Image (cartoon, rainbow, N blue to C red; front, side, top):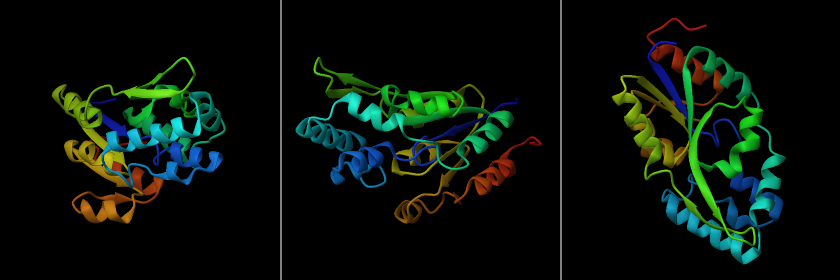
Length: 206
């Protein structure tokens, strides 16, 4: 496989935004906010958990929404191509308790993310980050192991990972992220992203 690894974000790259789906299913528009809107992840999660507590929405309710979700059109085909040409790691700020049914649909790629804390009522009482800035630190660690690291993501919480990688690509991001990070190249479709990865790879790809 060579010495190249690609790190991808999950939500907005391969699957829809989980919290937007929860907002639509529960009828609570405040839950639509994501890292595209609020760059401070702790601030965003604290806000979300307060709403869940207020509205008495437990982890089972959220898991039921996720179980009905599907990957984005073309995501599985693109990810299958990427995994046949690179070692692939998905670096996400979601939680293992949320991601499992989506990983099944994507063929169980390697996923690094976080954990939720629940209480005896089944309410989400908090969360445990794997480590601060886990996306950036994962890329830094892989580079220290002498891998060439390419990365793609769509949002504010991906930009540190993209800037740390050898080649970072914004994938179908909102315009304000493009404007704030003008040095990062942009791919709008899976085919564009595929061509971008082919261009930076040192190997002939299939």
